[in-house]
Image 1 (tube, each protein chain N blue to C red):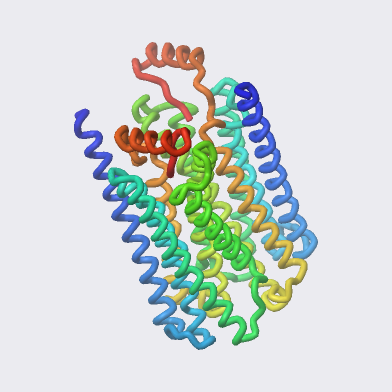
Image 2: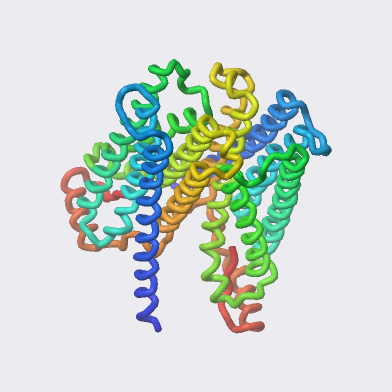
Length: 252
Length: 252
């Protein structure tokens, strides 16, 4: 019985990671179907088809990839920390690039259609999320990948970095849901209340995004899924630190 | 220097709790101003003035009081655990009653105005939040206040209860923001894009709610603000447990 407990934990972990990926991929596909099938597809010409890239890029970049960038610390918790850090940074960079394409798409569409920018709660929350996401990425790079800060500063910043990462994921999902509500009321206000298929599809997408956030949040915060302490890695790191600055090592 | 560190921690804690209360109270007041000043005030007659009770009740009950019910475990972390549990349950009950009044108000208004129910993403997220909130409250009551479950079951359920509490607070804030976006687009779609005062007020309210959630989330998840272990309380609890069922004690 004692030996089966960790196995059961591993099995639950695998199922939860699988569920998170299924929820994430389904969300991206449903966003594609919504914009592709119901809203006329995609283009890059200032039309509403360019706008359609906005939801797709935000769900793919700011939600799915951001979530997976955080998740690598749990999925690859037995791999060398340096490699996981690099992967974490690369997926975040990809998420950031895709998100910026999504933001350019909506500003481009607004300019062409003479729609004012940045007046809605969605735009305020979304812009706050993307600005904080950029700051978080640069800070993470400076503190943990090319450590320019002292060990003490890194150790102090680590819990803030982890907390802000989870806050940003939640803010990204919230901003997506606000944008979806805006889009539905702008496009199908009357039929929406009659449970039109497009409205139901968007609602299901919203619930899937919430579920993605909940499963990710559980995987990230659960104590037993944390990276186990690696004495060899720590001693190497201590040795390196002692040689360079005489401090004690830390990292996300 | 060593002695000043805990004092600095206490001071930061006090400032953060103060900030959370300021954010929460300001959010409730701004919701009252929005509905009272811009939307015609309050009534209980099936009119749009009855609807106006809905946002006020949800921000007060489901966000502010739910947040404070969680916060009592940090603010009163040196008080007897039993008293804090009772306070936690009572504030949650108050939050639940106020939230149910808010839900009755919107269904009543919909019936009178012949508006379909439960078609929007806001209604799906909001209803999911309130149903899960009810389940969480009943489970908490059964597990921790009148413990009918075994010690092992209570210990297993505790981290799930804590995680779900935070998820519910986030879902409540998200549902409020979705509802606010709906209300703004139903009421002032055209002037909203011209930065009309009502729209700006609602956007500021939305940002304050997000900030309330972030500060609460930080206070709740920060390790150093947790309830310190109390050997006397534990030994008394062990004694009681040994007498009654021979298990080991746990509690939120």
